[in-house]
Length: 505
Image (cartoon, rainbow, N blue to C red; front, side, top):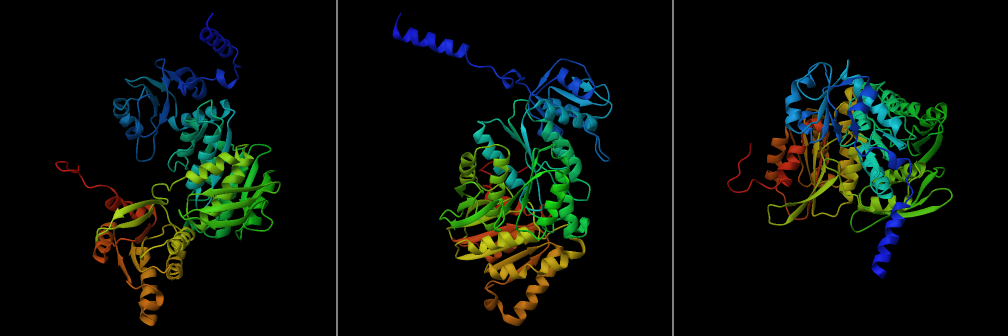
């Protein structure tokens, strides 16, 4: 027998002897019709296997299971034909239809049942994330760390699927073979976090920070902290609560975690933080080199994302990865490679009107007083010939709105912003504040050599920016609540124009 043949025989023998684990016996498909029947108590019209779950017919991909949800204003059953035209293999419906389907009494309850079945059939360690600022970025960072360490066996909620529909949908999409699941949980009103935590039943629950987001509906910072802390009520027995150590509400959060019987881990700059920042050195690419004390070890790693807020975020990420049994080295590599997310820090080099290049930072998806201050501080630290801030209204601040908008004059001055374009009705309070300050001190003393302008819409803001002019070396921050629509401004300056002969729809 030749050496090559002998080697092949040994390789085949090794493959046959490869240990088969319980995980290997789990199905490769996401859901079969029989599994959906067992989970929901429904009746399948056909045998099928689904590779995904979707609730919006516009997002259906070939192989998906379409859940025809019914709401007060919309009924998913109206879009069944669209879903199947896009490649759906079956649907969950509350009435017989002329497509492969699983018939149930209530499609929303069926989605919840499917989510719980996905949760219970998997041995994945589940991490839940909430907080006033930074939920999505932290969720993506934890996922990247765990996915790298598990070689693709981590799962997460996509986009900002963090509400009463998005969280169950994200759970229902979790493959049985997942080793980790990372889920974001958001709220607008009191009483919304606890049900989401009840769906996920996390092993680890992380609160990023407490800030006046949605204060219009909650009424006070204490109420916001209390609502965020209800994530701990869903923790599994022996679970870990991860709490920011540098807020005025740390002890309040810790009290909630203790009531839930959780193991408590704090993170931040405070001397008594369990995951404590020792040093943060800015690097040329805009991020930071971090040294952290984990109590029994020290950890050095880099983060690609700029800003003080990401230094704190990274400590929370490391705390969560460690609590989940992940690999801290893989987490460090993931943080070093992360780029900004669309609407949440993505950075673009755009064409300037003088032929050069300008930096545009896209923070158009969300805004509250804390995140506004953080991103303006980062703009002030960004090397630039001129700094331009395009700021949209901060929503859901209620009676606090005028005060919080006026207070943005301070971080604008500290960031040495040359020109500000304020967008939306709520920004009139800041415009009045700046007008008064400029009248007293003059634009040069405030550092705003180009002054400011106030307008009502993103289209007007585009015109105002072009009128002011974009020069090579400019740094432009675009920040506002999503409903203001500043994403359209970002798209205008970052997306290439239609090619010759191509027309816009």
